[in-house]
Length: 240
Image (cartoon, rainbow, N blue to C red):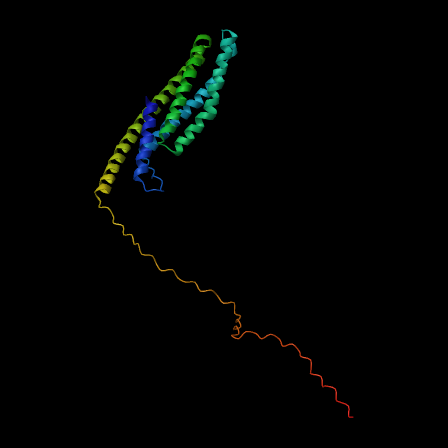
């Protein structure tokens, strides 16, 4: 299956590139060749011309005049509306992203899958036009369907070539990875010297506050003396 092959290719490419690229740096995008861009622009130009022709031919349909029941008319009208919305909205959005990244495999596959779905619905409309519509309506739509199927095959071929190129890139990345691992294993291990000695801790001096403390007195403080009452003179003896 092309889906499985595409998913595996993208996944392996990302894994191999991530292992080879330095940590923290995104893998460099490979340059896109001029021939690849030129091929894509030519395919997109043809697809755009086909889409415009389909829209004009669908708009000119007169489904209400077809010789069939109302259920078939209603179903065909719904298919026509679905195709026109896709050609107006979905298809330009996908092709715009593909122009920005010409060799993006997921976007290329998304475009192919969209064309495949358009061809399926458009085939039903063409068959109804051939059965119930006019000859001119059928012939115009048949030409449009052939051009759309051709575009689908062209993008399928391009997707196959891109997948093969990615497979070659993966093989190259694997070779580089094996060489890098071989060189790393052959390199002598680096010696790491671990010193057990610890640096002496520095004593941190406390900053003085700037005020000098008074020296403590060596002699104990004497208690305050109690005031003593003066001795009173004895009374004089009276003379006889």
